[in-house]
Image (cartoon, rainbow, N blue to C red; front, side, top):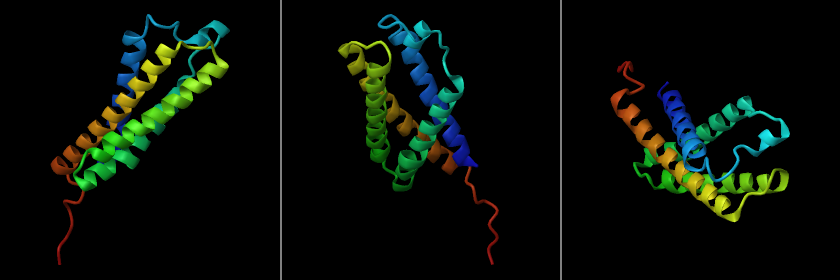
Length: 144
């Protein structure tokens, strides 16, 4: 059960860091989102799927090994690598399909996503470790 709490916390961390980026930090740099010009609205089910998938991926693939090894390096490095890959693909697709972004915005977006994925994986490992120590799963084991 703790793992579900850890995944939920990771999803929320990733979402709020990304929402802060989109709403406050680069709101003036680009006309967000470009798809509005074509009469489309945000695809919220896909966005929920994306954050759920990325949060679960960060928790299982990077935060959980960091908890087992008691070392945050896998979470930091793995999260940064995933953020770099995901945002590079996103920027490439955006350049091909939508209105092209400036190179400055692409570099900022890739750097930001690399940082927030790394931070999200790190915080996820800390949350998982805290849950493990404060709310252990197997307290009702009968000894013979």
